[in-house]
Image (tube, rainbow, N blue to C red; front, side, top):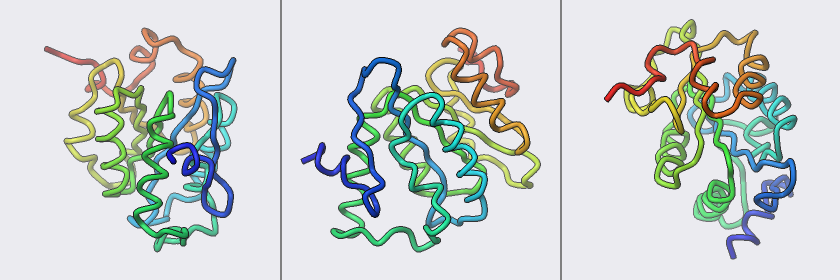
Length: 182
């Protein structure tokens, strides 16, 4: 059932990617939908860049036609929840743009932590928003990274993250809280 849900996305946009396929990571992108779509164009840039590094399971998050009311999936919210959790379980890396507050993104990140996923959260301090302490405070300098960035450098930040090995990923973070202090 999970495989069927993972293959069926909004308007057929979902993907089923074989984990461990040579050279193809499964990437789960998180961005606000019902919490606000102000950053949709930025999400499109992020998803476009992420395609260089693997198969993006949640491309629909960047779709211009997806409004604040979300998608209209047959099966409703329960189907969306189960399908997205199947994708999250399949993912090798989770990338979240966390500038626009979103209950759904926070939930996805919490589940990703429990699933021991590699996580990169991107936040724009100049937005005038304050990032939740539950997100910034989760940065452990290893599996959970929080990087501050400027909108014009998002592609470069993604390049640096994915082209660096795990040890170097902490070093390129400009966020001082990204290093775990016991």
